[in-house]
Amino acid sequence: MARRGVGTWLREGVWEIPLRRFLALLLAAALVTGLVFAVRVLAHDDRSCAPGVSRPQHSAECVGVATGPGPYDFGQDRLTDAVKSIARENARLKPGNYVTVALMLPYTSTSPTMLNDIQHQLQGAYLAQYQANHDSNGQSPQIRLVLANPGATGTYWKQTVAQLARMTTGTDTLRAVAGIGQSTAANKAAVAELTTLHIPVIGSSITSDDLADGQGGKNPDPYPGLARVAPTNTDEARALTKFAQLKQGKALLVYDNPGDPYTTTLQKSFAALLKGSRYEPWPFTPPADRSQEGTTANTFRQITDLVCDTDPGTDTILFAGRHVQLRQFINALGARGCQDRRFTVLTGDEASYLTYEKALNRDALRHNLSVLFTSLAHPDAWVKNPPATGGSQADFATLQTLLTSAERSPVGPIGSVALDDGQLIIGYDALRLAVHGIREAVQPGKAVPALADVGLQWPQVKGRTLRVNGASGWICLDVHGNPYDKAVPIVELTPEGSARFVRLAWPEGKPPSPDCLPPAT
Image (tube, rainbow, N blue to C red; front, side):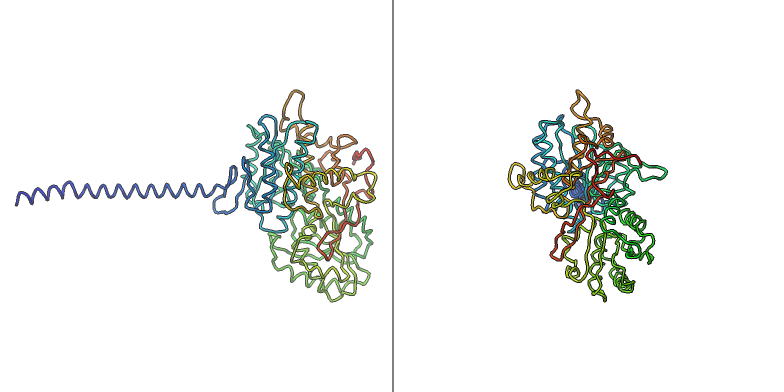
């Protein structure tokens, strides 16, 4: 018994117990390692949204460039139909015979009004892609369209731009970035980086003067390779005030302080046109994120009291601000104490967002208040008695034909369509300008153009034969890539929720000559 006890002790104490402990520890380590690995794998998978698109650390947004092959709508149901049609068109293209154009917009925006604009611009861009690939008499290269998302507020522009830069080589053959969206600091930085990398950019709805070349200063062309479809804020303000025939002492200015690229340049443009006004400009301070409500509604209530205190001859208010603040200001004016006095608010193209803004008090527009703004485009601009130059009924009818075709396959569907905010029209024209620059840059014997050559085409987009006959009007670019004397539709917000076309206006006071050649400055 003693010998068996000693043997048992030796076996259990020396071998079996330590061995069991060792195996238990080994198993635990394996489980922990496997768990860590599994967590990492799951976390990694969770960051991926679609090919080319992922969630950055500490963010739920899916950002990047959706490179397909399948459709990806960034979780926005309203974009699904158009995205599927784009994917179908892309799938029929053969590598080596196409170039890629990225439509860069904040697809993960949570603003309903912003998403309306994005949807409409995407629809217009797709129609231009389809037209370029099917209705251009076999011209090449073919156009592949992809969606690039820098985030709802442009936070992730750096990684999106880096991804776009990598796409300039290999089978992607990226040759242009269109869209961009609002004139914000993030978009300004993104455009600066893209053009530094020699990637051509075609702005659809950017209007800020400091997101344009040829504006003076130490570096007159900070964005080499940038072209724009929309006029600058200065040109819009010139067209608007010439239309309104402002009289000194009859108008006052309400402006965003400290402002962003859009509101600041609009303020400066309005201020230059208000010399001799009896009243100093009145500021308001919105949140840094101007899509938020903030407390500016309180400020506007006070400002409307001051509006009522002005001389009875004052009847025009120039407003330099974003659409959320404009909506708050209109609502405040609707409750003003002097509703027996008539006022007209004049503002920039941001007002187009309000055509879909449910929080706007439309009843305010029934009480001696008119809101006129410069739209980027309007479907009625070229329908009745259009001017002889600057655009045409036929150019807009081409887009209308495409829209009719998009109601069925193989062109569509593209989802519900609206034209009165101008975004579909301007999205269509921006991509048409991109296609023009790409195809003009192709050298003899080559299938696709060199990247740097595309941006060199913008100064030649003018004249009778090289201009782009856009649905929004003629696109004749000056040597800095800015549209010269572009048609500016003056539009009025209606109580019924639409944007009523009033008249075309022109930065130069009249339509361009038939040759559409910018004069020396």
